Image 1 (tube, helix red, strand yellow):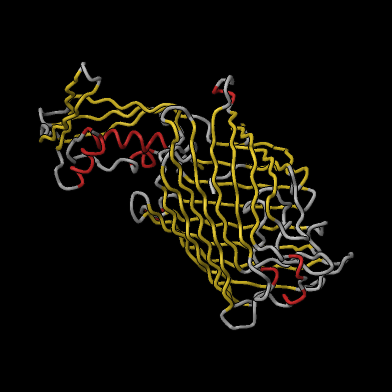
Image 2: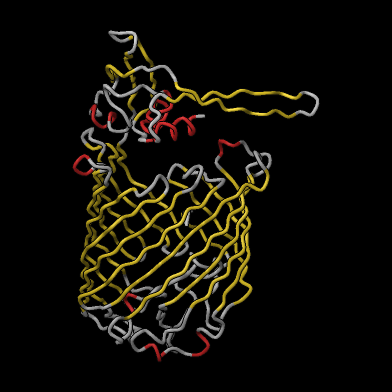
Length: 455
């Protein structure tokens, strides 16, 4: 009813009112629904009163409404506005009531909100099978100065390096439905068993996000990064040298389709992204990536949900001189579970991982609630099957150094089961995977503990 009234309003019927009539058939246990679309009473919004917002500015709430004082009053638009205000996640409750205006055809809209904490300050610690023990100290404010702006600063450390990140987003740049933001970072990666060299990367980017339709968004970004290689302990890399510097300027875009019923706990719909960027300065490349996941409930109201996920990537050298190893893809357990990070793909005879310029993969998964456990525990189980293809290193500079056994089976497959926990630190998952296809030199890993992601 709400959707139909909203669409009628969008087509110019400002006072559209939709009601449903049910005709029950007791004998068959079925009923028919008839939607009555009618021209409602011609009532206008005289005034909008907002109370309870001690921190949040009035305009942050008002801009979520698709109407203002003097516009026609439409109940579906009010419901949509209340839902949009709740989706900000700045308030623990949002109540909307109406009152009589100064004339019979006028109405007063009263919006009362109850604010909740939007800042997060603290330290977290955890463990990842790829990075070992890790920790982070962060400051996050989702409603900075009550203006609806997002601010985050974080310092992280793990056994493989340290990170320093800063991010700021203005969701309504210059009052438009355009999100603008800036990111800056400094990241230090140490030499490890899976990487023959380390690096220090410093960079940042500017970005703009624009909604194209109710489900499709476009974001545009551009930035700069300086990377300095560290390789002062053995084994020595055959592709880069200690102190070698790489500068890159990049510009690109991302298209995001969100057709999910619930972004946090999806049960139905498609979520997909397509991204392309040009990388210049010391490089001359086009990098393209596509990812998507489709959800469908297997049994209604049972919590059993099936999903199919696909992903692919390609790097094209525009000058014909190949792709430097520092910009190559490093597909690992996020493509096919059951392998170590950087555990499969082209590598040299000495064991140094090279990477690839092409990859593709598909995964099927069934997630289900664990019988006997209360829902508020946030635990669920899953079974999955993964398949991934990784190209060779022929387009990577010095890629001919790879040995035949490092990628003698380009197709990798695995099956397994997972335990997923919706923890206070975010969704975490432990995966037990058995590889079915692998190359001779691949490095497998039976158990993996990671952060659960949509794609």
